[in-house]
Image 1 (spheres, one colour):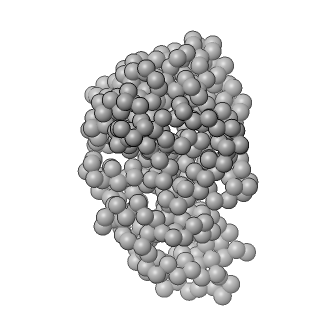
Image 2: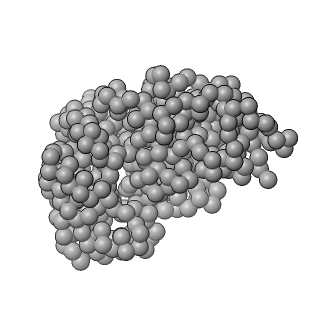
Image 3: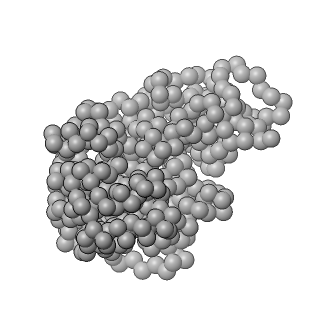
Length: 394
């Protein structure tokens, strides 16, 4: 039996929006078996004194590209498969140092994400978050992210592309309903895959219990995606009354990726192509109002940064809830819930993760300073614990 006791912890309860002080958390075989103040310590337990640090559920980042660098102009990069693998493994370790213990990769180079996910699951890669992956996205010929996605036109080609990704073992399918910022000569507001093309992908995925997420950056693209029956909208620039009504009717989720546009803009003059900077400038400030409108309307929202895109580095996965508080006006508890329990709900793992409760996996992010008092303390994780094992300590 593997029994550990984490003592003197201030536990952040994201469900009840409160902090429990001086708690002992018993972890047996990677899961929380008991917790409370003045809990007696079993003699067999290995004891870790957290010295009144703040213990949060491990963070989620549900929109990442772990095989990308975050460099300004990635078209200049020439990596072998081995080099790309080493890069990705280092990125996975970086997430852990940021307190992120679960990610969803929504588009990788080739099919590498599947092998990474499986290696994390079987323990071959130990210092890494748990993963769900999309593999390659599906876009129209010349559409958004055509450089790494599968190009498909018409219902039959889209059906086959979906089946190819399902055959490979995709946990989610990724579609592109509109153009994007980081595709050369792409127009973010241009409608691309249509309702019928996306709907056939949704049908194929839902047959086997796989969900579908969609890159959509204007109202028409969002509406087309929701009418096609998708499960989650990524980016979502241009939310209006019609899209909110469709969100309400369908129950679809929203991942606003607030960090990415601001990060691209921050790369102006530092290697990010001017075309990308100008497109991001048009979207950055508007994304704040879009998210707040959706959040206030009750649209379920989760946290993803789009890290791996230009100047959106893997070293700062925890910045999304910070932006939600500082720019969008959420409370720290609201933002932390989005980055933990609500993100776990989106990914269907909330019975095991997303909050610190009996029976759940012991995935924790530990902070010396209280992120509820100042959300920016999330940017300095001091310890990351996964399945009760300390994977990293500052």
